[in-house]
Image (cartoon, rainbow, N blue to C red):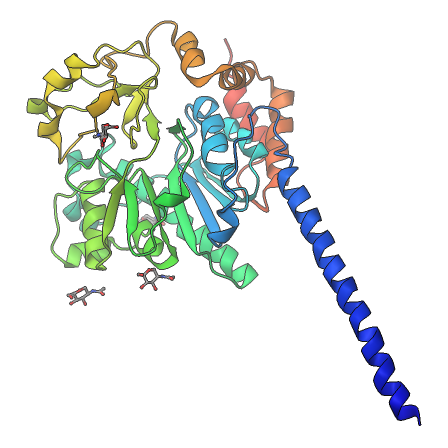
Length: 405
Ligand SMILES: *[C@@H]1O[C@H](CO)[C@@H](O)[C@H](O)[C@H]1NC(C)=O
Ligand SMILES: *[C@@H]1O[C@H](CO)[C@@H](O)[C@H](O)[C@H]1NC(C)=O
Ligand SMILES: *[C@@H]1O[C@H](CO)[C@@H](O)[C@H](O)[C@H]1NC(C)=O
Ligand SMILES: *[C@@H]1O[C@H](CO)[C@@H](O)[C@H](O)[C@H]1NC(C)=O
């Protein structure tokens, strides 16, 4: 008697929860879409960039930035706009040396997600006999020690990323590694993520592979970023007289990882003074103007009024440097600076013209920053980061802003 009732009633009610569930799904979807497009980039500096609607489909992405913050007031806003804000769901890791420019990293306060900030005190790294054997002393502007320092910063990436994975019991699908001194002129494109290869920028090979940016899946990236810990492998394979780029190349080859060179819209903003013009005969290094249409794929650059472009570039015969410092110049993509001296007088105005008013405003803001504001900004970054592995913000700001005179 109660059977028929019991059977019918659940059926009748069964439809209602289904509709409710559907409605709930629909509402959450609308809410998600709403939240997605209303994400506050929490930025008072940077113009939010167009977001790829497809980023959620790539899986989990870790972005690791390494290096000194020397000109981060100029490069930071471009990294935020063209890399970090393009991948708002990516986790950011930063490894940098403590110096008078570290306070500029506070610009990362407006990055979508900051997982770990590692700002370490500079210390001389022990050089082993093995390392001296593998590398040529002339392999870096600061010798073998400079190279070790750089490798150690890079190796911090898999270290921080692995720790985060252990804490959350997950694995990243992709790791993007690039540099704090990268000046980005266009967005990092999802199309440059390749599952079967490790992707690096084209050109600036210096006898190996350009190591100023790298994109790869989790396992390939682990090999690519283990710059220090794989040195014994290189040594036992009998390599010697390598530089950063050639050891990078050999290290990927040891693990049978194929590298793909693609063009990327960034350059390395540098204060280095480099002979001009970059004669193929002396294996010179071209320094691009940031006004170059690009893509510059990680070539050195600075703000300047170009000394050489168009026909002048054609005449230089840069293609002879294909395996070394070569940068694609066809179609007017490259405009050269005379970088034999310091940045030219009035470079701030040139920068403003090329980078835009928003970027120039950040530059001025950082330049005029006082201690209190600095501490507030660095504290802001410290709060934002899930893990702060660096000195007290007051120490960072004192180091940067308290010099007398
Ligand atoms: C470097 O070597 C010295 C002496 O061998 C040792 O005391 C020191 O701990 C080493 N430093 C590092 C960073 O390994
Ligand atoms: C990375 O890609 C290679 C080649 O497709 C594959 O063998 C490897 O398993 C991938 N690594 C991860 C962690 O998925
Ligand atoms: C790379 O490939 C070679 C030849 O196919 C093989 O002998 C070697 O074991 C491979 N190395 C790794 C690390 O997979
Ligand atoms: C130059 O431009 C042409 C036409 O857009 C294009 O097909 C070609 O690939 C470009 N070459 C280089 C080296 O960028």
